[in-house]
Every structure is written in C-alpha cells, then in structure tokens.
Length: 335
Image (cartoon, rainbow, N blue to C red; front, side, top):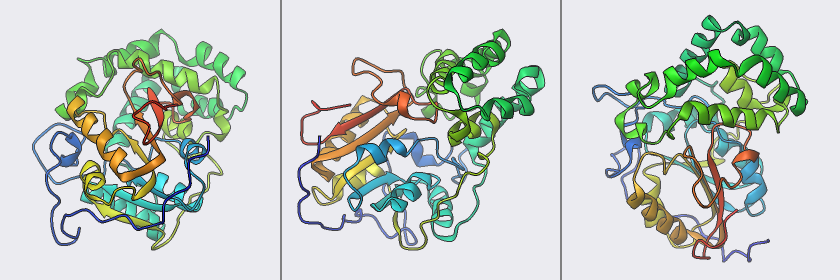
C-alpha cells in the first residue's frame, strides 16, 4: 500500500553529542557494537569490521517510499548508503565505530576501494579451510558454480557437489556454540548466532541459490568465493551526497525531531543486545519515522512467530529475518 503523504520536509536533527571530530559519543549501553571489535581479546582501538555490506538494498528499494524521501541507514561499509543515494534518496548514515565511519566516508566520497575487515578475515579462513580439505570447494569449482544463472541447476549442483558430509562436518566444527567461531568472537556477539548456526547457514545458502541466479548475485560471490562479481559496478555518490554521523543509532533516533525520517533500515542492530534494547529501538523508530513510514530490520536470528518476512528475497544469503514494518500502526502491519 502507498504510505500517506509526508509532512513538510525538515532536516533530521543531529544527535546531542559533540561533533565527531571533537568528542566521543555517549556510551551505547546494552550493545556490543560500542567497542568496535568483533573478536575477543584485550580492548584495543576500534577496527574496520566490515569491508563490504551483506544486505541486499533491493529490499529497501522495493519497500521504501519513492526517491526523494529522507532515509537513515547504518554506515558500515557504505554500500547501502551508496545504493540509496544513487536511487535518489536523501540519505543519513550513522555508525558508532569511528574507524568504520571513516572507512565509509572514504568509499562514499572519494571512491576508495573496498578493504578487508574483520568479518572478511573470518569468512576467508572458512573458505581456505574448505578449499584445503574438500576438493569440490576449490576456488575454480566455486567460480564455475557462481557463473550459473539457472536456479534449478544451481540447486542441483549445490546439493550434489557442495553440501555434502565434509562441508557439514567442517561447518559444525567452526559454527557450533562450542566451535571455532564462538571461541574468537567478542562475548557480546556470541549470543547473536542462532543455535545450530552451521545447519542454519547452509539452509539459508541453499534457499538463496535455489531462488536467485548466481551470475548476478554480488553477495554470493563475496560469501562463497571472497571476490567481487565480474562486471559488478561500484557506486560512488560523491562528496555531500550522504550525510554521515558518528553516534549510536537508538540515541540518534530518540533525540531527533519526531518524524524526521520517512524510512530507516537497520541490520544487525538487534543482534547481541537483549529484549530491553529491542523495545527501546522500536519506540525510537516510532518516534523518528513519520506515521506510515517504513522500517526494514534484518536479524541473523531464526524466525519467531512473526515469520521470516522477506529474508528469502534478500540475495545476501545470511539473514534469518528481514522484516518490513509500517510505523504508526502499533506493530500490526509487517511484511
């Protein structure tokens, strides 16, 4: 359904924190993202966590109000902000991690190339182990699989050539609660992984290859091979096209003027913090997004009673829930 007309446009208020260059935002209680590190160990300076983003902006482009709307996203690696700005949206991108924000700025404004973040290092170790132990997972075989453009053939090849006992044993060793991934993750992120994440992730990959052509799926190339899809075009909006803010997203939504945004997209924000944080986030979204606006929320968790939403339509393979919520409806309208 078409949302009601937007109220008179106004610029979203900046958070009540000092300028990013001059100070540090207030503590983001209840969220593990504040430390700027995915991995366990002694506290050190924040790192680039994500060199690329693993969310398909086609979901937002289909769900959001028409271009020109005021939208908020997580800055992360800048990919979603770039796609939304290129489509004509008025984009604000926020991130609590100053290192990640500086990286996004370099990509969005200067066209800097993608770097390797902590997430890419972890997935790279998994791919290297698979290639070393399982002949079917050598890079040449994976690249051949990724060139396919027939989902029926992809499903057959995935089942017959990739998703075998060897892969399942390796995935269990790495991704179970007592596995290698849990051992190296920051404690705040361990609870974000669904129980039996090895089986969950393989099911999500199988779901995606059975629905979306590999040859046009940038996220399949990144996850399964660690490379950019041949012919994929980089989008660089240029200076001033995306408003970048340093801060915690819930605090920003709470402090900005009511109805400052027409839509928001939030990925991973609810993964890690507890239910109290989720309730606070929901209230903040209802405050900051105009009635009839749109919120897209992604989570790694397995679907609850509300279902998976649009998770199967997101080509990035990893999400358990992708929910589209219309604001001002007391949570009744979700898709």
